[in-house]
Length: 437
Image (tube, rainbow, N blue to C red):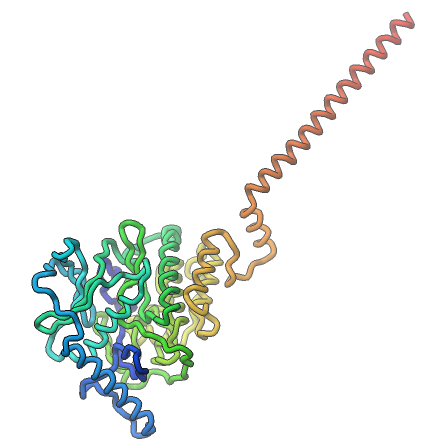
């Protein structure tokens, strides 16, 4: 199946799977964008659940509902009539449509993402959409697409405007490339890691990193897009253990097609999500979960494919949970050993064995680019010697030049002395013969 180009087109391997989650909302914290609100979508309480857990879930719904009610009370800026002239459609996802538009006030092209208005539109979708805009807008980094405005049209449609990116996705850039050409895209992945290091420092986890959500601009820029599943982590949150997908979730995943978004507890893209995310262990998802996804992207740079592939989202999800990652060099023997070590560390099943965040991972990637030592790789003594020789080639060449010059000068001087002694000896012998005669 061909890769997506400028817009995300899910495949059986990489289709995003979004599920409703129930997470307590602290005062002043953004309500998780997938909290259920409608009676038909409200959490189903198990008979064995404690009353405390039930009250917590009900509180989540009430807080989220209050946030949504503010959307209809004028908290969002009303669009100035005629400001945006909508042009061609750039793409669409599960809940939003992105269009190219002309901002008549500033005289520039922008991208407008609007919440699709359709029958059955729920408050959950509005919360998720507004959270996406607000979280993205608060992340001011050159590697994160900037948001210009969040507003609401007269008909109630919620939208936000952002920079119009001219280029293609990293997924499209990787299409049909050889290993050397794929490795040349490593600086793009470093840019992504730098952007995610900033987001992690702000307490934000993307939760859906993949080549289709990375834009490669025409002038060297690299931008992380689609923050619709982003989560704001609470300080000091401790990971909690969770069970494997329930039977109902398994059924939804099993029947998921390439273009469907499945509802449940798990969310993200199976081919790039970590085991804890595949299990629906919401509280365990943190910066290290994004590190896993970054490792999966690096794996694709090295091998030309994600770590796990399958015929359905369910198949891939099971592999992520149960199977070990095949080392990149077993799929592509020419892959650099050091980059293989970085990928395998990032793709560890145990989050504690991964890099702590994207910033720690980018240090190793930059070290590889600059010819330094990669901490994730175990070097043999001969490897260290050879690397030292390569890193100090200029100095060694200068030393060799001086050394060979000194040896040459010594040899030349010795040869001159030998010739002088021979000349003196010949003169002496000639004098002796003259006296005898």
